[in-house]
Image (cartoon, rainbow, N blue to C red; front, side, top):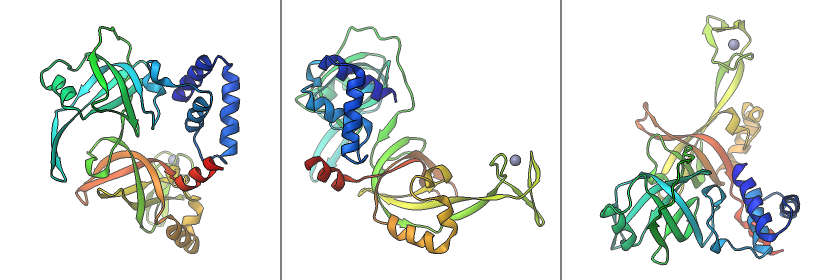
Length: 312
Ligand SMILES: [Zn+2]
């Protein structure tokens, strides 16, 4: 919510209109696009329609959205990673990245330019420094700096920073244990749902004793079934098993449907091939000794429809 509120305020101030009017325009735009776009996305379209460009202003991290091309921010480096070397298609290069934070949030910055990377290698920019970035571009939710971007140390003092869980928009091959990630990929395999018994009162796992089920707190109970749904996501770099519990399952199919074999199969056929944005936490599965993601959010990518609606 906070990103959105900040953005609405900035649009209102920049355009010299009331916040409520901006909100009305956003709602109207969303309605016109049949709800296929997020409020944040609609707000970005409204900003463009009002002729607002963010190039001349410093933005807060909380205001950043995917697809911005000339972003200026001032923020504190809170986590600096070692410079990495890569070789791809016969090209060798270096890439550096760090996390910056201000009083609205944190985000990852990726440096591709050797001159920028040198500032890290020679210690000019270190953890705890406040940096000024000009002309960055947001890719997913990271800020990427090219040779056209600028970065320098700032004398701005920044005491209050917000260092929430950083969500890494990365590829599956880069995913590491413990990270919160957001990944765009395609569902390539869906396993049969599994069920476990929980106490209807407290939703904790029910223990079977002979024929009866017991809850540690509520005694003998008639348990209810909760589903676990596993599927495999492929983002072009790697495939990974995704684990979904009730709350996330509800985002893609009514949980009850999974208890009906025909409906469960119909869902499976429909879900395979679907492109999604998946948020979750990367965990090591000790049984298979590999990484899997415990889903915390699932959102279908509906690019084609969105483009069609935008053109209409
Ligand atoms: Zn209970």
